[in-house]
Length: 397
Image (cartoon, rainbow, N blue to C red; front, side, top):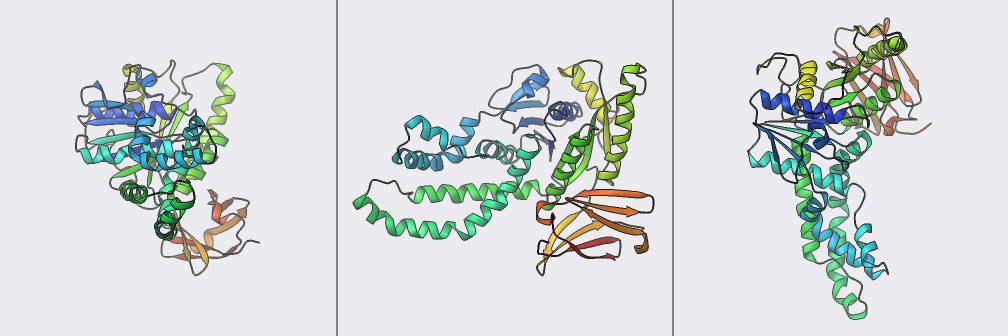
């Protein structure tokens, strides 16, 4: 079983790459389902076939699903929303406003992502391909279990105890709705499901994130930030897909400048994400829609050979091991970066805004720092074995 998450800046071709990957997996004989966690579904458009709320057959061994978000929210958030609607209505909102307000930011995407647990546990699939929402929404989504865990462990027990004490008194003097035990039981159940989801998605042997980008400066910078934050929360990225590369065979002078720009930024991609493999995809001469074009894209990404246990198999693990991680120790932050076969005197560090620039001889790498590290001065750095450890003080300048 493999779970592959494809994410990237909106408009980079993420859905097409996810769909092409799913079709390649099915052609290799894997029972494959591809789903979207983006509220603006486009999987059906990519396959040029209608998709339903439940896994819908597309080709032999391939199913696609565009999740009904209202159904998912009722399934996972029904009790919570019921209480919140009642509370907002008591505060004077009409019923429609209360229904809309009860849909908290991130609830829709989160409920969709939890579908992965159900599909995994069903045992019906060998590969689950996820067309994630654009980068920002995906990062918020994947960080949510950590936030909720803090709330559940520290605040939730207090609120539950208070509710039990004041509920009888409140009912006697006011009609304000207070959550009953079923509400708190729903929260606990939701937390359990989120914890399981987090465990599954942070298992590098089971789940891999793949960043989809175009060789453009703004897109690369956003992908770098995504890569850093994914590492921070323990999600393993095993490959980068660089999409819409203008082929060398294109000789039209109109594209000459674009080809030079792409060549420049392709080097930046290699530098920014090393040692992750970069899978390149050409700009096709027609729209990538329908099974035929998706198969062409799959062959361009993974190679023409349709054989399991080879480089052409999308379910293989392209990179194993941590590329970088951030940890807190004794009030300071440590950025740990594997750098094998490098001498200490070859390394130079430069900090600029939200970037840490690492120079090694004639090569350099720009790391986008997590928000927690931006503005923190570098206290020191040391080379331990084959690993560079950069220490940031815990206080802002």
